[in-house]
Amino acid sequence: MAITTIPAPFRLGFARIKQLSPADFEAIVTALERAPTVGGLKELTSAVLQQVPTLKRQEIEHILRTLFSLCIYVADEETPLSENLASLSSAMQTSGRPELALSEEEKIEFEKRLDRLLRISAVSKSAKVQRLRLEYPNTFSDARILTDMRPIFDKPEKRPVGCAIAHILKLSYHEGGDHKEFYIALDTDDLETLKKVLQRAETKAASLKSVLEVAGLPDFS
Image 1 (tube, helix red, strand yellow):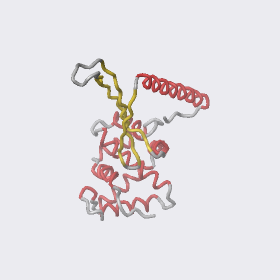
Image 2 (tube, rainbow, N blue to C red):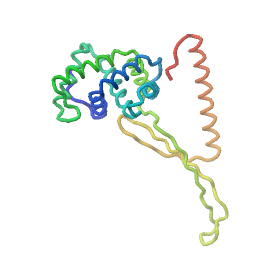
Image 3 (cartoon, helix red, strand yellow):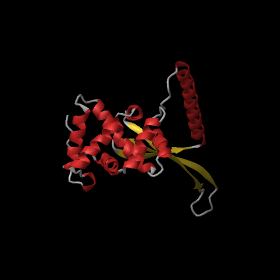
Image 4 (cartoon, rainbow, N blue to C red):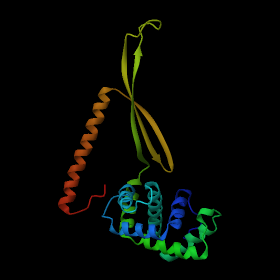
């Protein structure tokens, strides 16, 4: 199926790939070709950042996130890669967005760049890892625990007789393309429960990693 539009989340990535200087582009290609077998977006971004200090982490993340999406798309398509890239660059030309506009000469160079990037093993493997990590209805984004003291009054007009320590767990997560969050009240016993649950998860993960080592399989977590 031909690519007719450029989804909003990936416009910045394609624009950045287009704008890269020849030196920065070659540095990214070299960094990706030398990158060890790693996990998903964060791990590969760190590997590239070490080799390409002229770019910011956020810029590299935008580029890689866009490549991952395109890599997964073309992998699921029977259309030849060259045809997919041609329809992509045509969609950019007709998008009406200055940052995505391509002259005929730029169109040829842009397609060559994407072709080289998509054929790098680290890109295709990391794209698959990232896809597996995100194939859930909700994915974790961040967490924070807010702690405060709440006074307890015997009578409103008198000094408090004591205080209760309260904890609020704030969980941020992604649902589809939306960023959401919710709050959960915790007491001291709840904190201990969470500690035990996390420690148990770490123990199980360590056990599974030892199985991978014995089997000679890389750990993409």
